Image 1 (cartoon, helix red, strand yellow):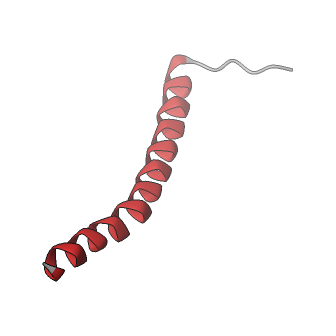
Image 2: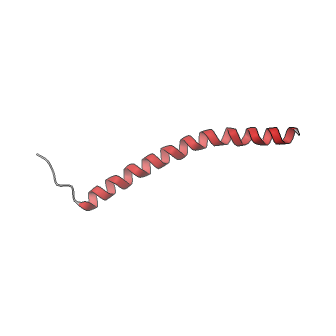
Image 3: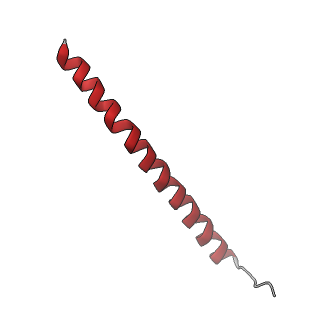
Length: 47
């Protein structure tokens, strides 16, 4: 049997999925950005 999904539940589910995807994207971005930023500081301090 298929249950009815109202607009409130549908919007909440979509918001939850978007939140999880945004969190994962920011996690990956943080892991990539921090070493890159440190490398730039290291290169600038050598000059």
